[in-house]
Image 1 (cartoon, rainbow over the protein chains, first blue to last red):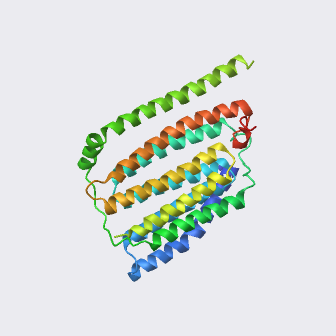
Image 2: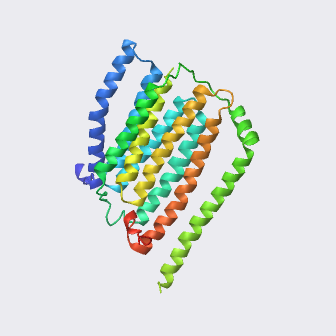
Image 3: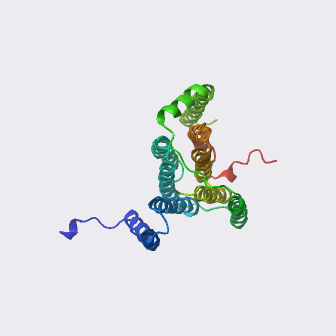
Length: 210
Length: 102
């Protein structure tokens, strides 16, 4: 019966390797977090937060560092869904749903289509620029300054509160009605512009450039 | 209850990673993905401040919604431009778009 199984392709091997790495890295973290939770050091909400934060940061590092362009965009999906989980932990279900709908449904599909229509088929491996050390230095500087500043500040101990859907809608469509209309016009202009731009390129390709 | 510093540190790290991506990547699409990471970090900050410190007005939630909307519009328009660039130059790297270099 084994000869019916398909041969492992490059994609299967990638999935197996990625799963192995994720398991090896995520297993000890999970064990440590469970231990801390049972010992009573951190609460359940904090443990969920640390797991979601690990997903977000690992996906972000993957999206920034992986050389294969398609795998990098798959890592970006993990990050955006993890960010939706962070929104849920911030007690805003509506924004988590919007995040999943807009990013998971729209933006990622657009990005993948653009990847497929450019160079993903012929050459999925990209070479990054030569300014990597400079980029790392600047990013580490910015992150370090942000973290040092916000750990130095006195936040008190504020508590989170749930915003009801009804209040959110009232505030959005009554107090912010003019910005909502402006954003609607912006979306209209942006997508009309994208459509016209891509369509003109199609026409030029069809006629042959002069 | 999760302290607010956790969310702020997470957002700062995410912003720094996205900034590294913007500077280090050469493909325009990957630069766009890194910009998305930075926008997500900013939205986390807005929502954290709104839910923890602004219980009555919660303007940060509205701003995060606008950030998501404008990011979607930006991706749609920028990908059209990237496709155009690819048809002109046969590559999507940003250092191929140097017509304005004098």
